[in-house]
Every structure is written in C-alpha cells, then in structure tokens.
Length: 182
Ligand code: HQG
Image 1: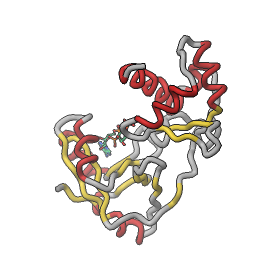
Image 2: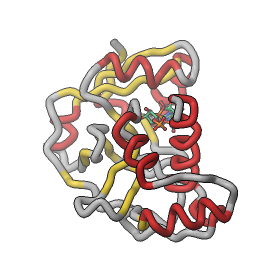
Image 3: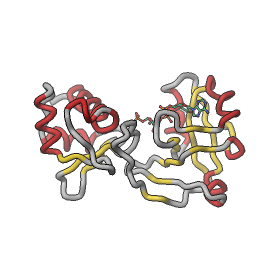
Image 4: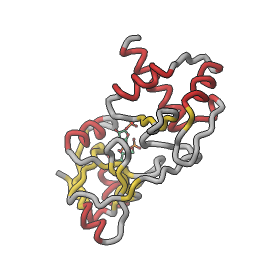
C-alpha cells in the first residue's frame, strides 16, 4: 500500500465523515462517530476497498490528524471540519492561550475588517496556536496573511473556545476589534 493509496483513502474518509455520509448510506451520530465495520461494509458496496489495517494507518499517518479512533478502537470520526448537519460535536470548552492565529488570503481582508471572522460553511472559525500553521492554511486561498487574535480577551468577555481532537482551536466568530494583522 503506497502513500498515494493512503491519500486516496484519507480523501474518501474526509468526504464521507465530514461532508456526505449519506453518499455511502451511513449515518454519523451527533458526535460524528460511525462504526468501522459499518463504514468498511458500506464503502465496499460503493466500490471503495478499505480494511481495518488501512484505516488505522491513515489515522496514524494523516498530516493534520484529521481522524480520531474511539478508545475501544471500534469507531472513527473526523476531528473537525464537518459540513453535514448530522454532526455537532460536543467539543471540549477550554480557556484559550493569550493569542491564537488565523491564516487567510489578502483578498479577504476588506471583508474581514467589516464583518470580523465568520464561520461561513463550517460550524466554527479555525484558529491555530502557531503562525506556521496559519500561513499554510492561508496559502490554500491565495496570498497568505496571518491575523493575531486576542483570544484570552475574547474569552474574558464571554466568547467560548473549544479545542478539537487534533489541536485546532474553534470559536463561533471573531469580531474585528480582537484581530490584528501581523
Ligand atoms: C475566510 C483545513 C471574507 C477565512 C485547514 C478563510 C484548517 C472570510 C475562508 C481548516 C471572512 C474560509 C479551516 C469574512 C473568514 N469575509 N472571508 N468575514 N471570515 N473568512 O477553508 O480557516 O484540510 O472554510 O479567513 O487546515 O481556511 O479541511 O477555513 O480563508 O484547519 O482538514 O473564509 O481547513 O483543514 O475557508 O480552514 P475555510 P480555513 P482541512
């Protein structure tokens, strides 16, 4: 099994666990979990051969730790980034560090200045603890720019923060007075 195969399986898992579980006839619970046996069986029916071993390998090697196995090893879910309404993970609410970072593209700056950061298609705005990750995320959209967020100040004013399984910080929105371009 090559790394290309693993990427293909990772993309497939992202699609069904984050966006379209119904495309292979599976249902996720409200925390995003699905039984691995059901997943393998339904994937096979839709022309995708995966095994317990391949799934474990994808979870272990995924660059962004996109997937999490349950403690008993019987279930899998995407750590974050769901667009399906089946899922609303009860993420752990946490006190954020003083600053968090968000990478975006320069072309979005005017709009962000007007509206602050909004979740858009996702459930939350995604923030990282380091600028390197933020730059990588921003590059996906164009010329990257990093915004520094006064996360602790937001928290002290009542905004909620959550830490996803994979270390990504989540919050519903970031008003522009808490943002600074760096
Ligand atoms: C921007 C990847 C205009 C926002 C990464 C971003 C991340 C606004 C884009 C995860 C705006 C949404 C998330 C406003 C926000 N006006 N643009 N008011 N507010 N935006 O892809 O944060 O590969 O939905 O800055 O690693 O880029 O999916 O979010 O540029 O963790 O696993 O609207 O996706 O992970 O883009 O990326 P996205 P994101 P995965």
